[in-house]
Image (cartoon, rainbow, N blue to C red; front, side):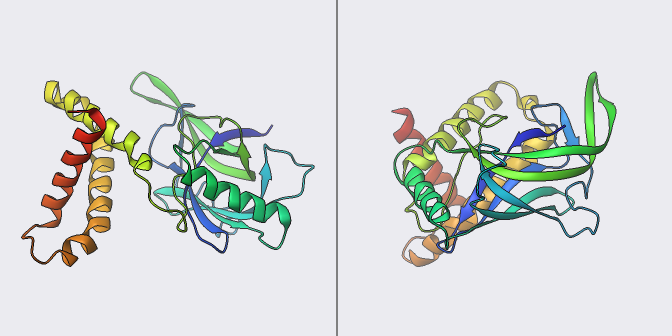
Length: 236
């Protein structure tokens, strides 16, 4: 029986090629599932090619195709929209529009069959460990099966301030929570925040390098940027 889960588009270029993040394997998702390394890689270990559909409609013409795979830590879908077709071009344009006009609303999911799995306990929670998946397709949907699915970046779309508002608000809430209780942040949360910190540092590094008159390290620049944006969005 086919099941569905959400995914998140991370980037897409003008040629219609993009990348979607499906899962962090070691985490337990909102369905109570986690993944064994290699679960997405198929019989030959090289990944699985699947069609990109509209709302899981298997009778419709695909917009393109995707290669689904994992690297032992996270699972991804390499997306390839077919810009030789009208449908592919229209969806490419629609994704750009979605990103360039306020908060993105387009959501995504993928269909799969769990071919091999087992149940374990994590503390008091029963968790399903997915060991081998047959992924059938990747779909654009009105509402994804999970929480927080969206198209979050296309290279040709301008970076808008609206894209960062939710992140800034979440980081501010996290700061307030940690001031009250440092134990509120799990080991996984610490790792994810470290990855966010590094990614923002990498993004700002060229700007810092260009501003040679300012004696700012990357860490200082990141902290100052987040402080200013938090105040702006929270009205402080």
